[in-house]
Length: 408
Image (cartoon, rainbow, N blue to C red; front, side, top):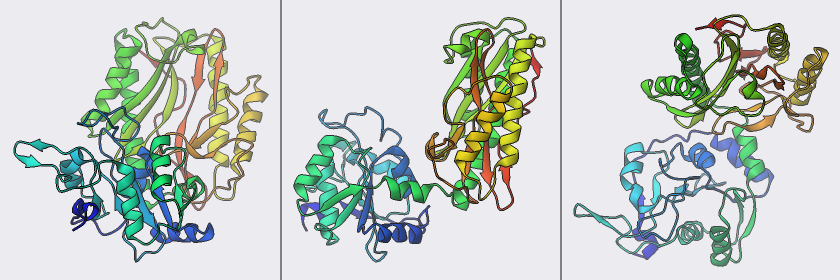
């Protein structure tokens, strides 16, 4: 048995991939690609439906104190060739528990012994992840093939090492394939997004109901974070901005609210790797002044128009234009060129509601409609909703009321 083979485990796994593999193969065929290789948290999660809890995007040094945790997933175009995943040695228990659909798990990394149990790399597996990936590619007969790799997410030393180990391979950027694959959600993805949106509604409510006291912005954040944890999800992050402070700073602070100020909340939750993103604006203890009310009315109408216009066949650039025109008719400029974005394994992902994006909406896309502005003397004003594009329009996934209410 070779060193590379010694670290390969063919585990019992879920038989079906979480994405449309036939479509993935078709996209690879269109671009003349033999294999797609990804390593970012989002795309490992997307392709394998598994992410080690300390992997991808986190500064997690391995037991040897010399290397950083990273996992690659490889999916060949030819469905007869088995996909592979490269867990680090210390995640053996985690990947066995999660049991993703990919059976070939090629361990790499430091050798260790915990409570008498040796790591799966003890038999002579590669000590670095690039060697592990190169072995998997070579054993599939693709060492001279065209490999679509996630260039933006691959650390430069690992990419250069792969080039060294696979000198005959042609490496191209995988971004176009991954974006095209992820932009339309599967029923499983939609179910997860719908569920995290439901809990996000509850979290937003908990944040505003915390105003029954006179909480700091950080205490409002804590009230929302608890809701996600209580529902078995992860709290991502949030913005909490009391009044004019939100013009320049939306992160939660030790600030207490002032009666009559607006309270803008924007919160993100995570459910099985899928993100929510939602924003509302209300007031503390009494109706705000006319400037605040006018600003809220303008953003509310912009949100309503966008909800009405979203549907199959609509260009996202046109949605952006409509948002800018509607808000502009009230005398307010949009905060940013884009008026929203796709959402899924990333909070911000294609398509982008901006004049440069040529995407035409199709059923199964999930968007965040996000008209937003900052108004001097008022604060951050933003009503943001997750919507699913359907055959006849859109289904709004975030349901917390959009009208200006008073809490506290």
